[in-house]
Figure 1 (cartoon, rainbow, N blue to C red):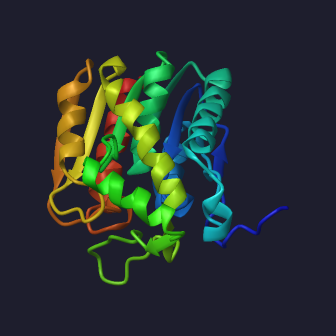
Figure 2: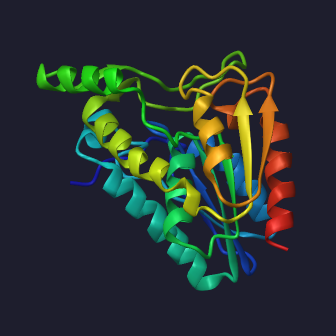
Length: 250
């Protein structure tokens, strides 16, 4: 059964030049958090795909049945669509979108470059995974929302008002494999990290920087929380990203 997409959560696609950019949003979020970046990349002449990942931008109930396999397939398919019409393709991902971007870079060696914005690339400690399993076994389907971690007053990314736990469990299982294969990422990378992030711990970025085999530059944000693409440092994030894309896609 088709589920209505929340206003503003639609995917974005642009047929531009011979260089492409795949843009990926975060867990329980939607394309709204990355739309400005996608539109700026389009204005710069790139072909752009910003997919709405399965179960996102609709309802929490719709998301409960989705898994890492669904989201990673969405990311791979969007990359392949761009690759079919572009000479070079780079990736830009926020949070889980960063983890999905890492996955794509691990399985598609043609990736020209990666921008990781507060990426999730590392599973949580074993005790957290055990607590998650116990909640699910007790019949708990969702917990308080993790979305809209934005320092800017009035900031809202349109994320769900709850976090469904079965998809979280699947996410962490998928991220485990991503983490184990970070060494396969040989493309140049830009890592953008918020000093204060209440969703993804900074050791995710630490591991990414230490484990990828390609060159990586890390920039720290001083005035944004997790959803940095919609926060006080939005313009900085966008300028850093576009400068990086110009370098790797030239």
